[in-house]
Image (tube, rainbow, N blue to C red; front, side, top):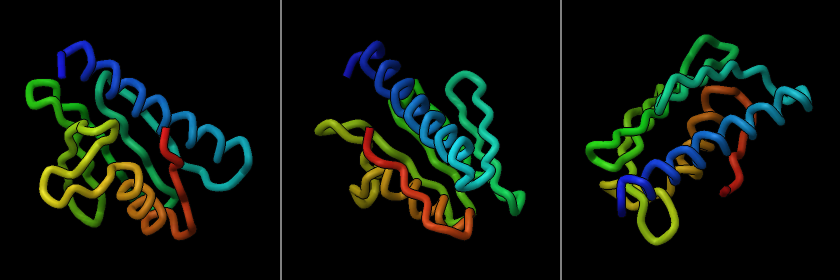
Length: 110
């Protein structure tokens, strides 16, 4: 993957997450505050817990930090996959958002 491809994929991923959260706010599903600074997206939940998603350009990875742990993802076969177990980023993000949000929260694949 070229650096340009990596930048495009990470930008699309972060924008997709932000758009999903904006939709939840508009539909009054849950009040999650999102703050994006460059390649980092911080999600703040009503219980004051956070999920942080961070682009790691030198490694061409995306890192996810949640109450349930930290995870590293690489883009392969059209999706972000965990570097240890191959699980898919959006599915894992949905699991942790559900746990921290106290209700079912699903990020659909982009």
